[in-house]
Image (cartoon, rainbow, N blue to C red):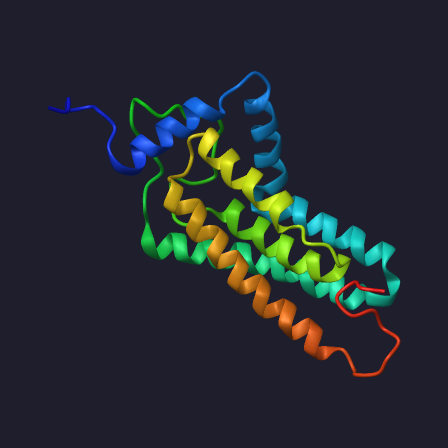
Length: 184
């Protein structure tokens, strides 16, 4: 028979994930990722760097950067409707502060996935496998999201990023010398 405070469901998965992921140095890295992704500021800044460096597609970089911020804003709107509280169980250790007590979806997962999708189109490299899983894992390691929070955030960011990426690709005139989706 289960004890009253035995973690179940997503809490059990979250507690197990923390146990597996929490190693020397990983909490510091996860906190750094959390700071970078807060309010999508780090991803926005990277987009601005892209706009400064890639003058030929400056407008695309600026639109992609705005899309990342827009995806973040969409996740905040969903949070305010759903109003799911962050994990709060003795088996889950919260290792970072958060700007709100709302959990679903993860705004970090949303903006990171949107940035990965959009910036992949502009760089010609698939950034999703390198950027998204570490951010999702960091949110679990830090104890601030349930697994479905990060999965829903990644899905939301993927959909929004994909829609804008398609629009950016369609906006390019055919037969021009502009680089399509970062390919040369």
